[in-house]
Image 1 (tube, rainbow, N blue to C red):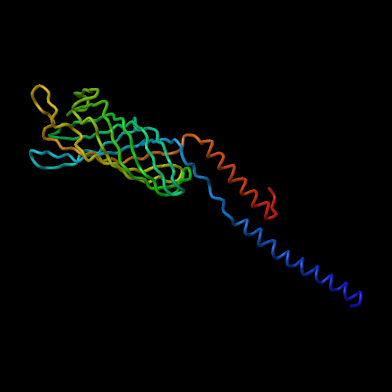
Image 2 (cartoon, one colour; image 1 turned 120 degrees about the vertical axis):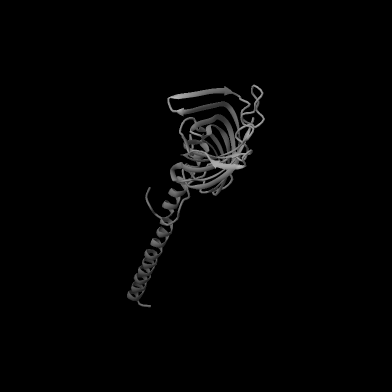
Length: 261
């Protein structure tokens, strides 16, 4: 083969390899560019359980008259807060428990007399979560729990500035424990909307004072709706390490694609 033909063949081969490289390289870069590095999920963390805005009512049944009425809507934002201990089993399923303090109760009006009854409770929920377990992402949650009333308060009035009231610590006017069930959703950034129901009687019909049983005819079940926050309190070391691993993985993919940090 003449020398000039060998030279042309070499040039043509070089151009062909250059063209193939130019086509292949963008494909590699494009693949890396579209590779999504998932945000890390912490396996365990401590969070807040703040049910700040609490709206409640009650189904009030008079067992003597055999009729049921709904209590007046009650609103409170004081002392509805606690801690949660969260365990994520996977990216989409988690469990949690915790400890919290609640202000719960109901309002009834009979013959122009308004009576407000409430307890401060210390409780422990046990629930599960289904959704996105990444911090501050959305998920559905449900479960149950038990409250222990520590302070009971009762207030009555027909004229608002003329009230009779009292409170008792560890009162026998309510059951010693109050089980409940709940369900709700957590939105992005940790805002929650939760419904809660107490299936047992809020009052103790057997309570006796001065030979009388003031709650003998009561069967009261609380229904609550709260707006709150459920967010991690502090990022754990494990979570930070997972972030570093994720960042390193992203950098490695970018470098393999020929990109710059």
